[in-house]
Length: 402
Image 1 (cartoon, rainbow, N blue to C red):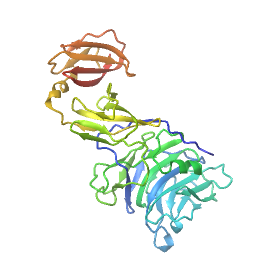
Image 2 (image 1 turned 30 degrees about the horizontal axis):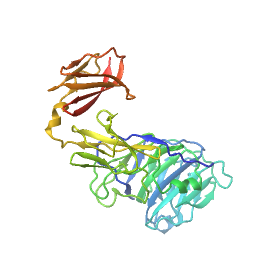
Image 3 (image 1 turned 30 degrees about the vertical axis):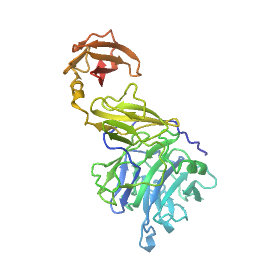
Image 4 (image 1 turned 180 degrees about the horizontal axis):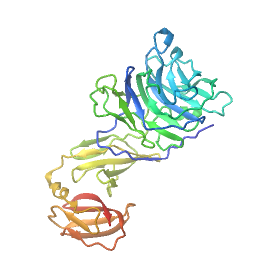
């Protein structure tokens, strides 16, 4: 079945940390692997798995090597698992337990390769199609009935029974609920894609950590479609192996890197639309729609970047180097939340602009006050966004009106 890729997207990723880099994971072949909370569909349904891999490992069991697992899920029974791996002749293979289909194009040459397995139970030419760098390697049909189980979630770098860990590097893992065509794979295999592409159920971009240095805190592999994140298991996260490393030669769809210099945040992406976000409240900052933004108070900030209809949000960057002039408004907090009245606590040193907005951004009420309790119109119970501005500094809150 031909699959037309859709690049209309909206994704938000708001975690405190450093800016993204285009990385991959290095697996040591001993005990490194990634578990995830993603449970693919079981049974005999169409699917596609893509990945970028780089390995020079011996994968031939009768020549001193062993199977190298790229991804796996299902049950360890005949026909019950979907094991995408490198095996005979250093080529990719799809194993379903008891039988499978093997390719012939060598991929264990120490170079990056885009590999894909397409399973289409309706394909009369062969239910399994294997692709390397956009080229059809082989087609075939397993001799056992395919009935993929559900006992083990999607796993990267190890088989479902806990053996044959991958040796090398893996990047850009994608799972689709349809059988992609060769044209689909050629169109998007060499670039990052929009996480809301139609039919895409799981997308692990691997753009975490800093290549080759200590990354002991970076133990999560975000999943960008439905949040079925992965957890790194047994990685040393330091040095050139068993760690985050430089990624595959994949073109970035959106560069979500941010730089902070002299109190000014600047997005690296060009030719895009921008909307800066206050990560403390998760709300858009009014008027902050340029590539650069100068915060007026210390806090956590991100930017939504839209290119070709696809919107991605950067990671949040902490700004804590602004002068103390903005510290007065930092002391302002809601006295109680939820509450029936809008009551502030903190140091109000001058007239303070107060604005109330709906979650859609519609202005509901505005006033100027030097008091801590603001008399508001009769508002329905619910969630509102409140901004306060004093001495040129701005702060936002989410207020639950009782």
